[in-house]
Image (cartoon, rainbow, N blue to C red):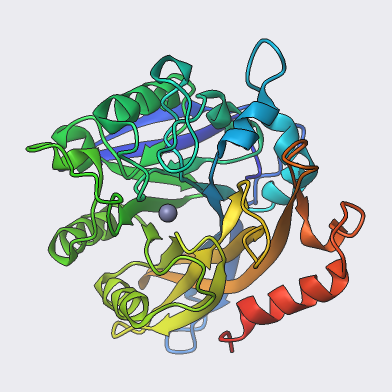
Length: 382
Ligand SMILES: [Zn+2]
């Protein structure tokens, strides 16, 4: 994100709005988008009557799976501690493009106390979260098929760490009250509500009476939460874990669910789980607005390679809010995709690099790959 010293986040619980300031890392890149005031003359009204319009804009972005296989955390160990920042240093400026950035935390960050592990039940060092904050991530989605890999202990340890460093999270929760709190982040005068759901947890049962531990896809529950989120924000953003692994196109279930969520009021859908990229699309809604969906963001960092599993990227979309005497309008525009590639040297030296620069990192035909990926991602956008 474009960092400012203060990003305000409101947590909305029932009718009470509790706003507090969230401190983020200072950066020399502070460039808040200025408020744009314009005056438009309304021809329907007397000439001297001026209709004041306040226009606000932000760019929202998302990256895909942060999937910390054992070679990745072993590579991050410097002899005394885990340090992941260098893995993202080549894409730091890219990740500063959006004003607000979300990532899918695919592996549980339960920390070393619970015993680190890779595939098939992941438990990663807490320090992954520090690197995400340093790279510009503003909120992480934690509902996915690995949420219960380290059970309730893993979730609670992860949440405690995320809260200790001030990184907002959504998708798995400490208790029912925590689950009910909407994560609403305000930036440049625009309030965004972030929601997160997953299709399942790899067959690991959710502990009895503790449904709050992970948000499972359930149309009735989602509908209720979307409607609450709409009331409390200007736009609703949902991270969703769905689809078939290693499929480069969404299945019918994803398409149907996307349409349902769009019609209920989700404005932006950031999909993940297939580990490869699936295209972006606009969905026209019954209420005249349109929803931006990216069916799968692929892996942002992992130890998977080949067959498109080492290609991910940043997806962004602009949100414009106009407020006048006639009311408020919110419009989405300018979707963009910036492909990235994970390079490593025999399971060492993991780095995420922009795909167009991957040639120097050893990827053959990087230019052609870049064109192919852009074509793949943009093929359904008009
Ligand atoms: Zn997954």
